[in-house]
Image (cartoon, rainbow, N blue to C red; front, side):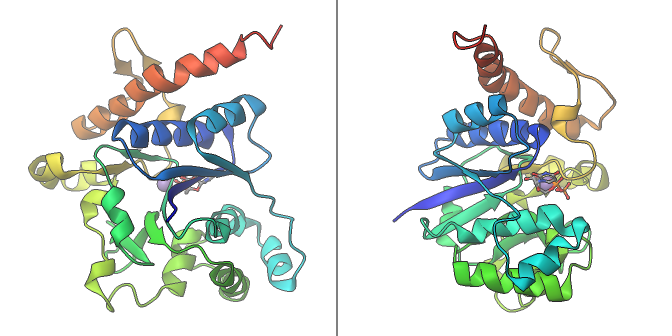
Length: 267
Ligand code: UDP
Ligand code: MN
């Protein structure tokens, strides 16, 4: 039985995120496969590094289908990345998958997620009757993929992104079955580090996945490896987790990036 963690990167920035995410899964010794979907906007350097870290790198082409649902969707540029994320359902080589946003960092093993059924996810901190679509358990199926594409082209997304769309499609999530509610510790979004500091303090050791949701992403910051310091001002928990991201980046991703940059094949 083949099961995988799946992520997505359409730019070099998100590809860096995916590399750190992949390394964080390796650091907690996952026994599942690692799969990343990319588009052809990702540079060769980052692609080579993704190939070294992930078991499978899949290039998804948004123009590869000509049916009306796809075409209708392509007329909605705001749904571009959402549409790309839906491709995770076509990975039928796996029986079950866990999708993780590329801005997630795994702190403890989350292989137990594969005991859950589609669609399992954590509540969103902003509106807890909605699940956060940065971490979810699903079952790949081309049939579901086609239904999602059709649904997206007809209904769109109430928030312009994949979260609104997936919540509308899997609308029974809020009330039907509590076993499909993952604990919040599997998707702790960075707004929590400001909105509920005492809870982060109380449950700090239970946190399994930190999700840097929001406009500022870890790879956009400047890191000083000698002083182990970051540019900018952060609440202490946010700084702690951003530093964790950067330490992993500096130790496991950066050396390979610079090595392949100046490797024997480059002159
Ligand atoms: N993503 C991407 N390219 C983009 C925007 C998003 O590859 O330009 C992917 C990436 O995996 C990212 C996910 O889609 O983690 C969701 O977007 P983001 O994490 O920026 O949304 P947020 O969690 O901040 O709402
Ligand atoms: Mn995210």
